[in-house]
Image (cartoon, rainbow, N blue to C red; front, side):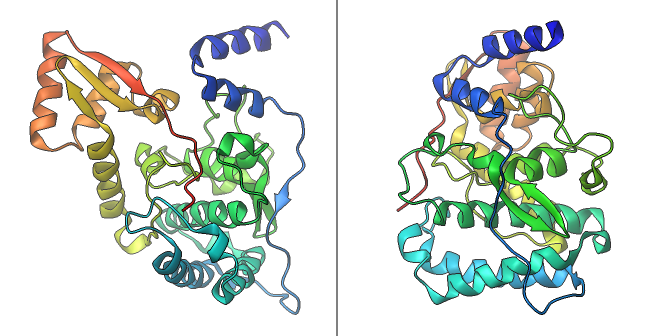
Length: 301
């Protein structure tokens, strides 16, 4: 009990902003009721190759993206999207996730698969919220309870992000890892944490990275491109002050053990002028990091 209290006190000191405090309290919730958005398809009894289902979902999401996502991929017209017959087709395809065989995927395919499923689930879950509030923080346990049945296992948005893609690393506002040692979903976790995944996961907020569709064939290049795009838009240098997205504060441990290490990691994905400026500031020991506020307003148009 004392350990939990100490950890909680440390987290409270770290989560200074009001939005972070709300996230913290959400993750302390003992309500584990999942909102599973796909059910078992009638008449389907055999397993379906995960690559086929992923490709089918990708094609449909691309069509929906063309119709209902803004050009920059950062906002969605949820009200019109859910009225479209194509969205009904999308929901039917999501039901096939119950029957996929995740064991058929190699690590690169699995990473691309879960990135796409995360973004798909975000759109699916937000389309089901009525009435849709202005802020994600007004939806109780959105990331913790919005879920798909995949291969017979229930994965929430948090499970996918922290349990699978972050290599079973605890949420910054949680006290333990998502998957315990005896959790069968642990077999699907990435073996290594790739920090670039933070720039391809769209959580539904206006400050989140753009929504994309990813393929294992060019995943490495796509992850690099996503990191460059997000960081070039959010990193600002003003004298000796470097402004970063608060995403890099919450998940700082994924990028480095301190602000200097985080900056060196970030610099490699910036244009040469910004990269040189940051390296010079680091060498001068005069650099100050400011984490800008995160916009949790829902990316609805």
